[in-house]
Length: 113
Length: 110
Image (tube, rainbow over all chains, first blue to last red; front, side, top):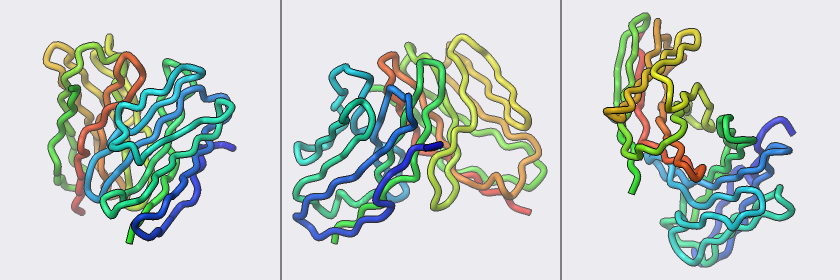
C-alpha cells in the first residue's frame, strides 16, 4: 500500500489478556520501528528491526512485550498479561534507506480495562 | 542516555512567525527531524536536516541547526490556525533509532 498500515485501529482488552498488534510497512522499506505514546506524552521507543540484523529491543519495558518481523515485512507486537499502564497508542514506522525520513502509521489505540 | 528537550507550549497570533526550539545531547546524531501531530492523527514528517547542514528552507518552514550547541529550531512563517498542532523534534542515532522530544503544543490565535 501507499502508507504504513496498522491494525486494529482501536483495541479494548481486559487486564490480564494477551493482545497482538499488527504493522504492515511500506513495501521495500527495510527498517521498521515500534513506538508507544501515552496520553499527553512524547514517543517512547520500543523496538527496531533493520533488515536481517538482530532487532534492537532496548526499549521494551518488560518481558511481557515482544515483537517479531516475518519475512522482512509484516511485524507483530505482542503484549502478554496486559496491565492498565499498557494503555497507550502504539505507533509503527518504516524507513526505506539511510537518507529518508520515517513514515508513521496511524497507530493502534490500546485500552486496558 | 540520549535526550531531546523541547518547551511544552507556544502560543502565537495568526500571521506571526513561530519558533519552536529543541536541544539534544547525542553529538553523533546524523539527521534531525521535525514531525507534526494534529489532534487524533498520526505523525506527519515536516522536514529533516542532515547534521552537516546549518539551515534548510522549505516554503514557510526554516530549520536552523547549531551543532556546536546541539540546538535545533523550526521557524514557521506567517503562522495559520491550521498550523495548530504538536510539533516533535527527533534525533536519529548512528544506529538508526529515532529519539523524540516531548513535543511542543503550538496554539495559533486568530
